[in-house]
Amino acid sequence: MASSEEDGTNGGASEAGEEKEAPGRRRRLGLLATVWLTFYNIAMTAGWLVLAIAMVRFYMEKGTHKGLYKSIQKTLKFFQTFALLEIVHCLIGIVPTSVIVAGVQVSSRIFMVWLITHSIKPIQNEESVVLFLVAWTVTEITRYSFYTFSLLDHLPYFIKWARYNFFIILYPVGVVGELLTIYAALPYVKKTGMFSIRLPNKYNVSFDYYYFLLITMASYIPLFPQLYFHMLRQRRKVLHGEVIVEKDD
Ligand SMILES: CCCCCCCCCCCCC/C=C/C(=O)SCCNC(=O)CCNC(=O)[C@H](O)C(C)(C)COP(=O)(O)OP(=O)(O)OC[C@H]1O[C@@H](n2cnc3c(N)ncnc32)[C@H](O)[C@@H]1OP(=O)(O)O
View 1 (cartoon, rainbow, N blue to C red):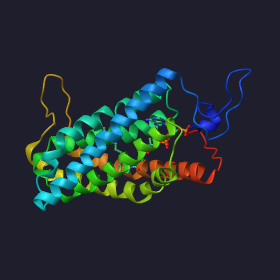
View 2: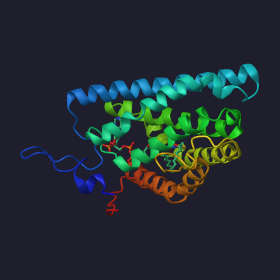
View 3: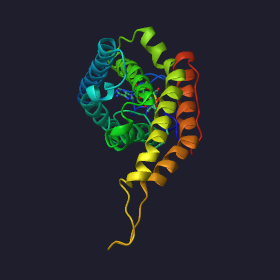
């Protein structure tokens, strides 16, 4: 994975005659891209704040997590699906995040929301769902407010600190919540054969969602450490000003 320092997408040499940007400084964006990203980040911060408030209110009123997912699912689905735009932002180059990093992050969330929690109703009241919902919500409020304040050039140190420290705990908590939720879904998926294609059929293809879930769980082992160490490197770069030179994958 090429770093922004290496590939020049961020903080690298600018066009001839222009001053070279200092490492770690926000890349110069066009006005349209800045306006769009500011709108996008404000909308996402607001969306995840609404979710946080709804979760706290639900718990205070009902005193249980049972029914929580059902009560917040529409907002969650809307804002998490909207986050697919993050991959588009990377692809069109208006943010310098790696497409692979953003792709793994966003697609694993979409998978959890639509193909697991939405599709498998009996697991919606599992404690593990609350675990990943809380981890995602705190992370996203911090992350999107970080981007918003950065774009407005008024970033409070606390937000920056939170963005590059909370993940140390929240990333593993979120992953444990996700893995336990998929694990809880396995018996139902095996019993119902949902999303599976059995032979014989006219296309002569078979697909077993149960084994797909096992493979997905296994894929966290190589993929999660990469995301986590990526964030640790970003943390060193942003909070301690270290220049990180990453090697190509
Ligand atoms: C089909 C099934 C697939 C299944 C796959 C299964 C395998 C999955 C394994 C992994 C599972 C992960 C599960 C995740 C769980 C959780 O989320 S738990 C909760 C805790 N989570 C986190 O802490 C998530 C942390 N993740 C992130 O922060 C990001 O998603 C990231 C993409 C990983 C971060 O990447 P990074 O390269 O560090 O980018 P940034 O710091 O965000 O940005 C770099 C520069 O880009 C600018 N930028 C990015 N986005 C924006 C934006 N929206 N608006 C404005 N600017 C943006 C940013 O400011 C940086 O700019 P510079 O300062 O100029 O460098």
